Length: 441
Ligand code: SAH
Ligand code: SF4
Ligand code: F3S
Image (tube, rainbow, N blue to C red):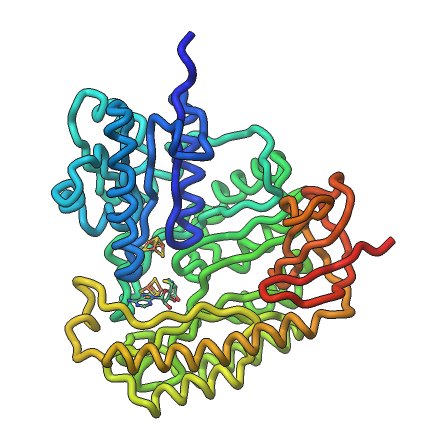
Protein backbone atom coordinates (compact mmCIF):
# COMPACT_ATOMS: atom_id res chain seq x y z
CA UNK A 1 0.00 0.00 0.00
CA UNK A 2 1.26 3.49 -0.82
CA UNK A 3 2.29 5.71 2.06
CA UNK A 4 -0.38 7.98 3.45
CA UNK A 5 -0.39 11.46 1.97
CA UNK A 6 0.64 14.27 4.29
CA UNK A 7 -0.68 17.74 5.00
CA UNK A 8 1.22 20.61 6.61
CA UNK A 9 -0.64 23.70 7.80
CA UNK A 10 1.23 26.85 8.73
CA UNK A 11 -0.70 29.43 10.77
CA UNK A 12 -0.33 33.18 10.83
CA UNK A 13 -2.39 35.78 12.68
CA UNK A 14 -4.79 35.31 15.54
CA UNK A 15 -5.81 32.32 17.65
CA UNK A 16 -8.88 31.83 15.48
CA UNK A 17 -6.51 30.90 12.68
CA UNK A 18 -4.76 28.42 14.97
CA UNK A 19 -8.15 26.85 15.68
CA UNK A 20 -9.04 26.87 11.97
CA UNK A 21 -5.73 25.18 11.13
CA UNK A 22 -6.49 22.35 13.54
CA UNK A 23 -9.91 21.91 11.98
CA UNK A 24 -8.42 21.88 8.46
CA UNK A 25 -5.97 19.19 9.55
CA UNK A 26 -8.89 17.17 10.92
CA UNK A 27 -10.88 17.69 7.70
CA UNK A 28 -7.98 16.36 5.63
CA UNK A 29 -7.43 13.47 8.05
CA UNK A 30 -10.92 12.27 7.16
CA UNK A 31 -9.71 12.16 3.53
CA UNK A 32 -6.70 10.06 4.42
CA UNK A 33 -4.06 12.75 4.97
CA UNK A 34 -1.71 12.43 7.94
CA UNK A 35 -0.61 15.61 9.70
CA UNK A 36 3.00 16.57 9.03
CA UNK A 37 5.23 18.71 11.23
CA UNK A 38 7.07 20.17 8.26
CA UNK A 39 6.52 21.21 4.67
CA UNK A 40 9.46 19.02 3.58
CA UNK A 41 7.53 15.80 3.16
CA UNK A 42 4.06 17.33 2.68
CA UNK A 43 1.86 16.59 -0.36
CA UNK A 44 -0.39 19.48 0.59
CA UNK A 45 0.91 22.72 2.15
CA UNK A 46 -1.71 25.11 3.50
CA UNK A 47 -0.76 28.66 4.45
CA UNK A 48 -3.44 29.94 6.80
CA UNK A 49 -2.96 33.65 6.33
CA UNK A 50 -3.60 36.94 8.14
CA UNK A 51 -4.48 40.29 6.55
CA UNK A 52 -4.57 42.48 9.64
CA UNK A 53 -1.45 44.56 8.91
CA UNK A 54 0.49 45.06 5.69
CA UNK A 55 3.49 43.11 7.04
CA UNK A 56 1.32 40.08 7.74
CA UNK A 57 0.06 40.05 4.15
CA UNK A 58 3.47 40.59 2.56
CA UNK A 59 4.91 37.71 4.59
CA UNK A 60 2.69 35.33 2.61
CA UNK A 61 4.17 36.36 -0.71
CA UNK A 62 7.72 35.83 0.51
CA UNK A 63 6.68 32.46 1.92
CA UNK A 64 5.16 31.49 -1.45
CA UNK A 65 8.35 32.57 -3.18
CA UNK A 66 10.27 30.24 -0.87
CA UNK A 67 7.93 27.32 -1.61
CA UNK A 68 8.63 27.64 -5.34
CA UNK A 69 11.82 25.56 -5.17
CA UNK A 70 10.00 22.77 -3.37
CA UNK A 71 7.24 22.75 -5.95
CA UNK A 72 9.80 22.41 -8.75
CA UNK A 73 11.30 19.42 -6.90
CA UNK A 74 7.90 17.87 -6.34
CA UNK A 75 5.36 19.04 -8.96
CA UNK A 76 2.55 16.95 -7.46
CA UNK A 77 2.69 18.96 -4.23
CA UNK A 78 -0.40 21.17 -3.83
CA UNK A 79 -0.24 24.64 -2.30
CA UNK A 80 -3.34 26.16 -0.74
CA UNK A 81 -3.70 29.70 0.54
CA UNK A 82 -6.37 29.82 3.25
CA UNK A 83 -7.49 32.46 5.74
CA UNK A 84 -7.98 36.19 5.59
CA UNK A 85 -5.61 37.08 2.74
CA UNK A 86 -7.33 34.47 0.54
CA UNK A 87 -10.66 36.07 1.43
CA UNK A 88 -9.49 39.64 0.85
CA UNK A 89 -7.36 39.25 -2.26
CA UNK A 90 -8.92 36.22 -3.95
CA UNK A 91 -7.69 35.50 -7.49
CA UNK A 92 -5.15 38.34 -7.26
CA UNK A 93 -2.99 35.90 -5.28
CA UNK A 94 -2.87 33.42 -8.17
CA UNK A 95 -2.15 36.26 -10.58
CA UNK A 96 0.83 37.31 -8.42
CA UNK A 97 2.00 33.80 -7.63
CA UNK A 98 0.80 31.18 -10.17
CA UNK A 99 2.16 28.25 -8.16
CA UNK A 100 -0.84 28.52 -5.84
CA UNK A 101 -3.32 25.69 -6.54
CA UNK A 102 -6.19 26.41 -4.15
CA UNK A 103 -7.68 29.51 -2.53
CA UNK A 104 -10.00 28.97 0.39
CA UNK A 105 -11.50 31.66 2.66
CA UNK A 106 -12.06 31.24 6.41
CA UNK A 107 -15.73 30.36 5.95
CA UNK A 108 -15.27 27.67 3.30
CA UNK A 109 -12.48 25.41 4.47
CA UNK A 110 -14.83 22.53 5.24
CA UNK A 111 -14.79 22.13 1.43
CA UNK A 112 -11.02 21.49 1.39
CA UNK A 113 -11.14 17.78 0.45
CA UNK A 114 -13.26 18.50 -2.64
CA UNK A 115 -11.06 21.49 -3.54
CA UNK A 116 -7.95 19.32 -3.36
CA UNK A 117 -9.64 16.77 -5.63
CA UNK A 118 -10.38 19.56 -8.12
CA UNK A 119 -6.80 20.78 -8.00
CA UNK A 120 -5.63 17.23 -8.74
CA UNK A 121 -7.64 17.49 -11.98
CA UNK A 122 -5.61 20.57 -12.94
CA UNK A 123 -8.08 23.27 -11.97
CA UNK A 124 -7.40 26.12 -9.54
CA UNK A 125 -10.47 26.27 -7.30
CA UNK A 126 -11.36 29.44 -5.40
CA UNK A 127 -13.80 29.14 -2.47
CA UNK A 128 -14.56 32.41 -0.71
CA UNK A 129 -18.26 32.31 0.06
CA UNK A 130 -19.56 33.13 3.57
CA UNK A 131 -21.17 30.03 5.04
CA UNK A 132 -20.13 30.20 8.70
CA UNK A 133 -23.01 28.19 10.09
CA UNK A 134 -22.42 25.40 7.62
CA UNK A 135 -18.67 25.21 8.17
CA UNK A 136 -18.63 24.28 11.85
CA UNK A 137 -21.06 21.44 11.55
CA UNK A 138 -19.73 19.88 8.39
CA UNK A 139 -16.23 19.49 9.75
CA UNK A 140 -15.29 16.04 10.99
CA UNK A 141 -13.94 16.06 14.54
CA UNK A 142 -11.10 14.11 16.06
CA UNK A 143 -11.62 11.95 19.15
CA UNK A 144 -8.06 10.65 19.54
CA UNK A 145 -6.05 11.81 22.58
CA UNK A 146 -4.80 15.37 22.24
CA UNK A 147 -1.10 16.15 22.76
CA UNK A 148 -1.67 19.39 24.64
CA UNK A 149 -4.04 19.80 27.61
CA UNK A 150 -5.20 23.15 26.21
CA UNK A 151 -7.58 23.79 23.33
CA UNK A 152 -9.13 26.68 21.46
CA UNK A 153 -12.82 26.57 20.70
CA UNK A 154 -14.37 29.11 18.34
CA UNK A 155 -17.84 30.13 19.59
CA UNK A 156 -18.32 33.34 17.62
CA UNK A 157 -16.98 34.54 14.34
CA UNK A 158 -17.09 37.71 12.29
CA UNK A 159 -17.60 41.31 13.29
CA UNK A 160 -20.24 43.99 12.80
CA UNK A 161 -18.32 46.79 14.51
CA UNK A 162 -16.37 48.26 11.60
CA UNK A 163 -13.56 50.02 13.43
CA UNK A 164 -12.21 52.34 10.76
CA UNK A 165 -8.73 50.73 10.72
CA UNK A 166 -9.75 47.08 10.56
CA UNK A 167 -10.17 44.48 7.79
CA UNK A 168 -11.82 41.79 9.91
CA UNK A 169 -15.46 42.68 9.09
CA UNK A 170 -14.53 42.23 5.42
CA UNK A 171 -12.48 39.05 5.76
CA UNK A 172 -14.61 37.22 8.34
CA UNK A 173 -18.03 38.60 7.51
CA UNK A 174 -20.96 39.37 9.79
CA UNK A 175 -21.13 38.28 13.43
CA UNK A 176 -22.27 34.71 13.88
CA UNK A 177 -22.61 32.76 17.15
CA UNK A 178 -22.66 28.96 17.28
CA UNK A 179 -25.55 27.36 19.16
CA UNK A 180 -24.67 26.67 22.82
CA UNK A 181 -25.37 22.94 22.54
CA UNK A 182 -22.79 22.60 19.75
CA UNK A 183 -20.18 24.49 21.74
CA UNK A 184 -20.81 22.34 24.82
CA UNK A 185 -20.58 19.14 22.79
CA UNK A 186 -17.22 20.25 21.38
CA UNK A 187 -15.92 21.20 24.85
CA UNK A 188 -17.05 17.80 26.15
CA UNK A 189 -15.31 16.02 23.26
CA UNK A 190 -12.10 17.94 24.02
CA UNK A 191 -12.36 17.10 27.75
CA UNK A 192 -12.60 13.41 26.82
CA UNK A 193 -9.43 13.80 24.71
CA UNK A 194 -7.57 15.01 27.82
CA UNK A 195 -8.06 18.76 27.50
CA UNK A 196 -8.09 20.62 30.84
CA UNK A 197 -8.17 24.21 29.65
CA UNK A 198 -10.51 25.66 27.03
CA UNK A 199 -10.15 29.11 25.51
CA UNK A 200 -13.40 30.29 23.95
CA UNK A 201 -12.62 32.29 20.83
CA UNK A 202 -14.28 34.96 18.77
CA UNK A 203 -13.29 38.16 16.96
CA UNK A 204 -15.74 39.68 19.44
CA UNK A 205 -16.16 36.75 21.76
CA UNK A 206 -18.12 38.69 24.36
CA UNK A 207 -20.68 39.67 21.71
CA UNK A 208 -21.64 35.96 21.77
CA UNK A 209 -25.41 35.53 21.42
CA UNK A 210 -25.86 31.84 20.69
CA UNK A 211 -29.06 29.89 20.58
CA UNK A 212 -29.57 28.20 23.96
CA UNK A 213 -32.07 25.71 25.29
CA UNK A 214 -35.70 26.44 24.35
CA UNK A 215 -34.70 28.86 21.58
CA UNK A 216 -33.54 31.53 24.07
CA UNK A 217 -30.30 33.39 23.35
CA UNK A 218 -27.35 32.85 25.66
CA UNK A 219 -24.67 35.46 26.34
CA UNK A 220 -21.03 34.57 26.94
CA UNK A 221 -21.37 34.53 30.75
CA UNK A 222 -24.06 31.87 30.59
CA UNK A 223 -21.97 29.84 28.16
CA UNK A 224 -18.90 30.02 30.43
CA UNK A 225 -20.91 28.79 33.42
CA UNK A 226 -22.17 25.85 31.36
CA UNK A 227 -18.67 24.94 30.12
CA UNK A 228 -17.53 25.03 33.77
CA UNK A 229 -19.97 22.16 34.49
CA UNK A 230 -18.16 19.81 32.12
CA UNK A 231 -16.16 17.05 33.84
CA UNK A 232 -12.45 17.40 33.20
CA UNK A 233 -12.47 21.09 32.25
CA UNK A 234 -10.48 22.85 34.98
CA UNK A 235 -9.80 26.21 33.38
CA UNK A 236 -11.69 28.56 31.07
CA UNK A 237 -10.45 31.63 29.21
CA UNK A 238 -11.98 33.74 26.46
CA UNK A 239 -10.62 36.12 23.85
CA UNK A 240 -10.89 38.67 22.20
CA UNK A 241 -13.31 40.92 24.01
CA UNK A 242 -14.56 44.34 23.00
CA UNK A 243 -15.07 46.91 25.78
CA UNK A 244 -18.58 47.64 24.46
CA UNK A 245 -19.70 44.08 25.19
CA UNK A 246 -18.22 43.74 28.69
CA UNK A 247 -21.62 43.10 30.31
CA UNK A 248 -22.31 43.07 34.07
CA UNK A 249 -23.00 39.33 34.11
CA UNK A 250 -19.68 38.64 32.40
CA UNK A 251 -17.81 40.77 34.92
CA UNK A 252 -19.73 38.98 37.68
CA UNK A 253 -18.65 35.59 36.28
CA UNK A 254 -15.06 36.55 37.15
CA UNK A 255 -16.16 36.64 40.79
CA UNK A 256 -18.47 33.62 40.83
CA UNK A 257 -16.83 31.09 38.51
CA UNK A 258 -13.72 29.52 40.04
CA UNK A 259 -12.72 27.94 36.71
CA UNK A 260 -12.71 31.27 34.89
CA UNK A 261 -9.07 32.37 34.94
CA UNK A 262 -8.02 35.79 36.33
CA UNK A 263 -6.84 37.17 33.00
CA UNK A 264 -8.54 39.38 30.45
CA UNK A 265 -7.37 40.65 27.10
CA UNK A 266 -9.29 43.87 26.57
CA UNK A 267 -7.98 45.99 23.68
CA UNK A 268 -7.97 49.74 24.34
CA UNK A 269 -6.30 50.88 21.07
CA UNK A 270 -5.93 54.48 22.33
CA UNK A 271 -6.43 56.61 25.44
CA UNK A 272 -7.63 59.64 23.47
CA UNK A 273 -11.38 60.11 23.12
CA UNK A 274 -10.84 61.98 19.88
CA UNK A 275 -8.88 59.08 18.38
CA UNK A 276 -11.29 56.49 19.80
CA UNK A 277 -14.13 58.35 18.07
CA UNK A 278 -12.23 58.48 14.77
CA UNK A 279 -11.57 54.74 15.15
CA UNK A 280 -15.31 54.14 15.65
CA UNK A 281 -14.61 52.23 18.87
CA UNK A 282 -17.85 53.57 20.40
CA UNK A 283 -16.47 54.02 23.92
CA UNK A 284 -14.41 56.61 25.78
CA UNK A 285 -11.21 56.20 27.78
CA UNK A 286 -13.19 56.76 30.97
CA UNK A 287 -15.68 54.01 30.12
CA UNK A 288 -12.77 51.65 29.51
CA UNK A 289 -11.20 52.53 32.86
CA UNK A 290 -14.55 52.01 34.61
CA UNK A 291 -14.76 48.47 33.22
CA UNK A 292 -11.25 47.68 34.50
CA UNK A 293 -12.22 49.03 37.91
CA UNK A 294 -15.31 46.78 38.06
CA UNK A 295 -13.29 43.76 36.95
CA UNK A 296 -10.80 44.39 39.74
CA UNK A 297 -13.61 44.56 42.29
CA UNK A 298 -14.93 41.23 41.00
CA UNK A 299 -11.48 39.61 40.84
CA UNK A 300 -8.78 41.66 42.58
CA UNK A 301 -5.83 39.69 41.13
CA UNK A 302 -7.04 39.82 37.52
CA UNK A 303 -4.22 40.45 35.04
CA UNK A 304 -5.16 42.82 32.24
CA UNK A 305 -3.76 42.62 28.73
CA UNK A 306 -4.39 45.08 25.92
CA UNK A 307 -3.89 46.01 22.26
CA UNK A 308 -2.78 49.47 21.14
CA UNK A 309 -2.42 51.23 17.83
CA UNK A 310 -0.14 54.26 17.62
CA UNK A 311 0.07 56.74 14.77
CA UNK A 312 -3.59 56.46 13.82
CA UNK A 313 -4.46 59.23 11.29
CA UNK A 314 -4.92 62.52 13.15
CA UNK A 315 -3.15 61.34 16.35
CA UNK A 316 -1.29 64.28 17.89
CA UNK A 317 1.40 64.23 20.58
CA UNK A 318 -1.34 65.21 23.04
CA UNK A 319 -3.57 62.27 21.96
CA UNK A 320 -0.58 59.99 22.35
CA UNK A 321 0.11 61.25 25.85
CA UNK A 322 -3.52 60.37 26.70
CA UNK A 323 -2.67 56.80 25.67
CA UNK A 324 0.38 56.81 27.95
CA UNK A 325 -1.80 58.08 30.82
CA UNK A 326 -4.39 55.35 30.27
CA UNK A 327 -1.65 52.72 30.25
CA UNK A 328 -0.23 54.23 33.43
CA UNK A 329 -3.61 54.02 35.11
CA UNK A 330 -4.43 50.45 34.09
CA UNK A 331 -1.08 48.74 34.61
CA UNK A 332 -0.96 46.01 31.96
CA UNK A 333 0.50 42.59 32.71
CA UNK A 334 0.71 41.78 29.02
CA UNK A 335 0.21 43.78 25.83
CA UNK A 336 0.43 43.98 22.06
CA UNK A 337 1.12 47.30 20.38
CA UNK A 338 1.37 48.18 16.72
CA UNK A 339 2.09 51.06 14.43
CA UNK A 340 -1.03 51.88 12.45
CA UNK A 341 -0.99 50.11 9.08
CA UNK A 342 -3.34 51.49 6.40
CA UNK A 343 -5.44 48.65 5.01
CA UNK A 344 -7.03 48.70 1.55
CA UNK A 345 -10.77 49.39 1.61
CA UNK A 346 -10.91 50.70 5.21
CA UNK A 347 -11.96 54.32 5.89
CA UNK A 348 -8.88 55.35 7.90
CA UNK A 349 -6.57 54.40 5.03
CA UNK A 350 -7.97 57.35 3.04
CA UNK A 351 -7.06 59.89 5.75
CA UNK A 352 -3.90 61.99 6.06
CA UNK A 353 -1.28 59.74 7.63
CA UNK A 354 1.03 60.40 10.58
CA UNK A 355 4.68 60.42 9.35
CA UNK A 356 6.24 56.95 9.87
CA UNK A 357 9.18 58.23 11.95
CA UNK A 358 6.79 60.04 14.33
CA UNK A 359 4.68 56.90 14.71
CA UNK A 360 7.75 54.69 15.25
CA UNK A 361 9.13 56.98 17.92
CA UNK A 362 5.77 56.92 19.76
CA UNK A 363 5.62 53.15 19.49
CA UNK A 364 9.05 52.89 21.14
CA UNK A 365 7.95 55.06 24.04
CA UNK A 366 4.71 53.13 24.51
CA UNK A 367 6.45 49.77 24.32
CA UNK A 368 9.04 50.83 26.90
CA UNK A 369 6.24 51.68 29.33
CA UNK A 370 4.28 48.49 28.60
CA UNK A 371 7.42 46.37 28.97
CA UNK A 372 8.19 47.88 32.37
CA UNK A 373 4.64 47.05 33.46
CA UNK A 374 4.95 43.47 32.24
CA UNK A 375 8.21 43.04 34.16
CA UNK A 376 6.63 44.53 37.29
CA UNK A 377 3.70 42.09 37.01
CA UNK A 378 6.10 39.16 36.68
CA UNK A 379 8.32 40.31 39.54
CA UNK A 380 5.30 40.63 41.81
CA UNK A 381 4.87 36.86 41.43
CA UNK A 382 8.30 36.01 42.87
CA UNK A 383 7.93 34.21 46.20
CA UNK A 384 4.27 33.41 45.51
CA UNK A 385 2.53 30.18 44.61
CA UNK A 386 1.22 29.66 41.11
CA UNK A 387 -1.01 26.92 39.77
CA UNK A 388 0.58 25.75 36.56
CA UNK A 389 -0.91 23.58 33.83
CA UNK A 390 2.09 21.81 32.30
CA UNK A 391 1.69 21.60 28.55
CA UNK A 392 5.15 20.97 27.03
CA UNK A 393 8.77 20.11 27.72
CA UNK A 394 10.92 22.96 29.03
CA UNK A 395 14.05 24.31 27.38
CA UNK A 396 16.32 22.11 29.51
CA UNK A 397 16.23 18.40 30.30
CA UNK A 398 14.02 17.48 33.21
CA UNK A 399 11.95 20.66 32.87
CA UNK A 400 8.30 21.08 32.02
CA UNK A 401 6.67 24.36 31.01
CA UNK A 402 3.14 25.66 31.14
CA UNK A 403 0.97 28.62 32.04
CA UNK A 404 -0.04 30.10 35.37
CA UNK A 405 -3.62 31.13 36.05
CA UNK A 406 -2.54 34.61 34.90
CA UNK A 407 -1.32 33.17 31.59
CA UNK A 408 2.31 33.78 32.50
CA UNK A 409 4.77 31.22 31.13
CA UNK A 410 6.29 29.16 33.96
CA UNK A 411 8.95 26.44 33.84
CA UNK A 412 10.10 24.12 36.61
CA UNK A 413 12.20 21.00 37.08
CA UNK A 414 9.78 18.19 37.74
CA UNK A 415 8.76 14.69 36.86
CA UNK A 416 7.50 14.05 33.31
CA UNK A 417 4.39 12.46 34.78
CA UNK A 418 3.09 15.99 35.53
CA UNK A 419 2.68 16.68 31.81
CA UNK A 420 -0.92 17.64 31.11
CA UNK A 421 -1.60 18.20 34.82
CA UNK A 422 -2.10 21.11 37.18
CA UNK A 423 0.46 21.55 39.93
CA UNK A 424 1.40 24.15 42.53
CA UNK A 425 4.74 25.81 41.90
CA UNK A 426 6.63 28.40 43.95
CA UNK A 427 7.91 31.22 41.71
CA UNK A 428 11.59 31.80 42.44
CA UNK A 429 12.71 34.10 39.62
CA UNK A 430 11.41 36.39 36.90
CA UNK A 431 13.11 36.00 33.50
CA UNK A 432 12.62 38.14 30.38
CA UNK A 433 9.49 36.37 29.12
CA UNK A 434 8.80 33.70 31.71
CA UNK A 435 8.89 32.77 35.36
CA UNK A 436 11.11 30.11 36.93
CA UNK A 437 9.46 27.99 39.58
CA UNK A 438 10.18 25.08 41.88
CA UNK A 439 7.85 22.27 42.83
CA UNK A 440 6.52 22.24 46.36
CA UNK A 441 5.87 18.97 48.13
N1 SAH B 1 -11.54 42.18 17.67
C1 SAH B 1 -10.47 42.69 18.42
C2 SAH B 1 -9.18 42.90 17.63
C3 SAH B 1 -8.85 42.08 16.44
S1 SAH B 1 -7.43 42.56 15.52
C4 SAH B 1 -10.89 44.04 18.99
O1 SAH B 1 -11.87 44.60 18.64
O2 SAH B 1 -10.19 44.57 19.80
C5 SAH B 1 -6.13 42.50 16.72
C6 SAH B 1 -5.44 43.81 16.93
O3 SAH B 1 -4.72 44.20 15.78
C7 SAH B 1 -6.36 44.97 17.22
O4 SAH B 1 -6.78 45.01 18.53
C8 SAH B 1 -5.51 46.16 16.84
O5 SAH B 1 -4.75 46.62 17.94
C9 SAH B 1 -4.57 45.60 15.79
N2 SAH B 1 -4.91 46.12 14.45
C10 SAH B 1 -6.02 45.88 13.74
N3 SAH B 1 -5.99 46.57 12.58
C11 SAH B 1 -4.83 47.24 12.55
C12 SAH B 1 -4.21 48.13 11.62
N4 SAH B 1 -4.81 48.47 10.48
N5 SAH B 1 -2.99 48.64 11.93
C13 SAH B 1 -2.36 48.31 13.09
N6 SAH B 1 -2.91 47.48 14.00
C14 SAH B 1 -4.12 46.94 13.75
FE1 SF4 C 1 -11.72 44.81 13.98
FE2 SF4 C 1 -13.01 46.50 15.53
FE3 SF4 C 1 -14.18 44.25 14.77
FE4 SF4 C 1 -12.18 44.19 16.51
S1 SF4 C 1 -14.18 45.15 16.82
S2 SF4 C 1 -12.46 42.85 14.77
S3 SF4 C 1 -10.87 45.82 15.79
S4 SF4 C 1 -13.61 45.94 13.45
FE1 F3S D 1 -5.59 38.11 10.97
FE2 F3S D 1 -7.87 37.28 10.05
FE3 F3S D 1 -7.24 36.85 12.57
S1 F3S D 1 -6.91 39.15 9.52
S2 F3S D 1 -5.97 38.60 13.05
S3 F3S D 1 -6.22 36.01 10.82
S4 F3S D 1 -9.26 37.33 11.78
